[in-house]
Image 1 (cartoon, rainbow, N blue to C red):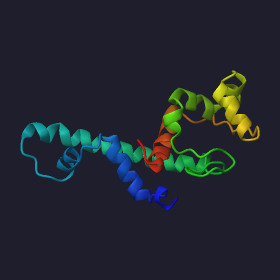
Image 2 (image 1 turned 90 degrees about the vertical axis):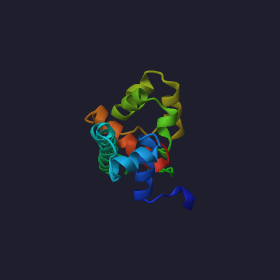
Image 3 (image 1 turned 90 degrees about the horizontal axis):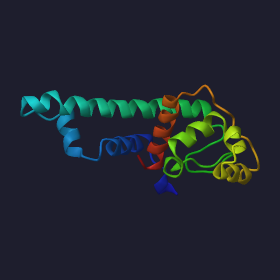
Image 4 (image 1 turned 120 degrees about the vertical axis):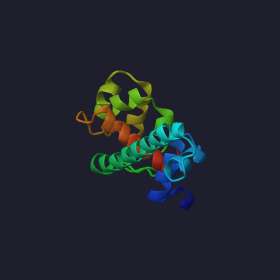
Length: 152
């Protein structure tokens, strides 16, 4: 169990590495290494830096949103009132997650088998709807969950 629990820093760094395609040579050259030609000075470092900053920002925003909206009922690796969320982006599509997070009861009422089974598994406790969350907000929450899940 201890192996599954990551420090925030380690998880963020691994998430950023994975988000950048896992190519550490481009990352280190763009971040601090000397630039050998003008072409790489104008294209690679800026895009790598922006990607890294963007991914880091998404995870940070996602952590804040998760704490404010999700943590009362969910943990990443443990069952609470709701299911553990580690790996949720591997088993559900973004569109499904957008709909579920905004209004789980509507997804259940639509006849979605996965939604109905989840509802039954968790004693027919309805998830609080979050219609105010934008796709970007949900994407940030999912980026945070993925960073803590050891994926992304």
